[in-house]
Length: 204
Image 1 (tube, one colour):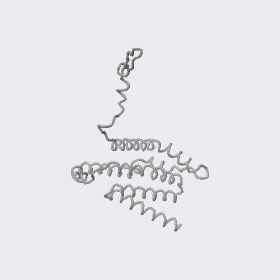
Image 2: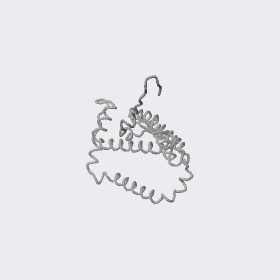
Image 3: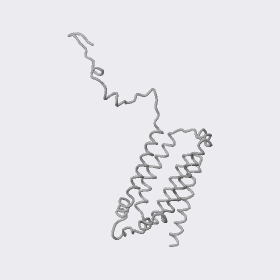
Image 4: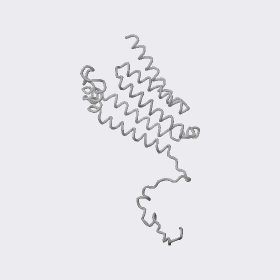
């Protein structure tokens, strides 16, 4: 028990510190590396809780794919961060408004135990025991029943993030030919086919 408690506090402290460095680091590449460290520490905490499946998914999906994708996208953007910092005061009121809205939402979530009596019943509903169901099956039963709408919302958020990454990395260059589907579909026969009347013994 003492070793588990020490490991919990070490991994939790490292996760909090790395999460803070994600937003505090000036170099975006360093921020992504600290994000990977945060994921590893969170995976270790899941292992201590007995959720090995979630820990492996966190390492394989987020560290192996998402975080590396973030790193490549940040390196491909070639953003002038000095110019972005110059407009900090210009967007400060909008950022403060968004932060205030998030703070109000967090307070509403924290007070949901008093506002919504059903929340206590949802939290008190026991998960299937490991002897009765495997770890993956128990997770699926909870995820696709009680948290089905939140699961779909998370999928929509990831879809928006993917579209945003594509828009940020898409660069239009004049010297590159691009496929225009509408022009291909609306193309007429006489525009693509030309008949030549070649007489016998003569070339084109």
